[in-house]
Image (cartoon, rainbow, N blue to C red):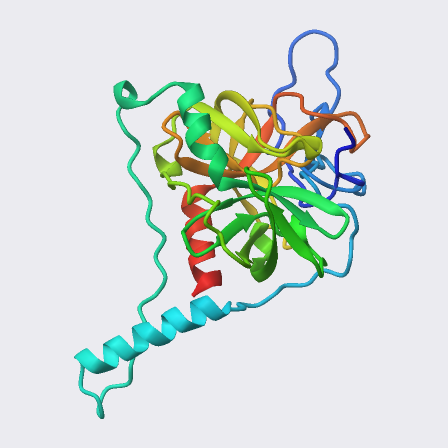
Length: 312
């Protein structure tokens, strides 16, 4: 088996918050935090307080921010929406206005109604893909039945040829609809028949609590369809993701996340997507270190707002 990975580490950087004001008792503790954070697919980044590997990007081309690029299917649906508005309104007086894209999110079910980890994994795997962008790999997941796939921006950064591998082994070409590099999110449009791709249910990250069970699903080290389990270690963890380095909140989890997981879903015990796996903390200066039980995901509540804008 030869995992399709290349140089896996490259992507946004994570910087933890300031260290405690008072030093611990006893011998003098080292200054700072004893680990660095790397996006789950990155080349070695310059030394910083923390640099995190992100799963699956190898080359570092010039940063580009793709605007909203609509696939033909999207354009037709927008045109149809506009025509419908014109027919039901005043034809000659009021311009047709298409409805904005809205991605539905489901309420988390009661704990008693949640199924087993095996059931949650089985429901999620058909909607998760392995993303291949040039020499880089990462993960992604379907959000609707029109073939829209969400992944990390650093996974597809600078790529000309992008494809996705479905859970049934089919490989389909895809193109980049839009990229938000500052939030490390991208939307792909799968070409061809996406019938083998199941849209995942999006939950609400605002309902997460520390200790909730979660699963990370993706293609770490090129191993497609890998599921790891853990808990929510922290919510509203301050981090810096994306090209702008803007401080924003992230979900921290101890579910194993490794290079190749970037862009894959973090799901709750009911199989609802609650985050997008993005970065991991590593020990030492090597950006090729693996998982140490500290991973980070973009909250799905923020993801839906950004993705709606990229598709609309």
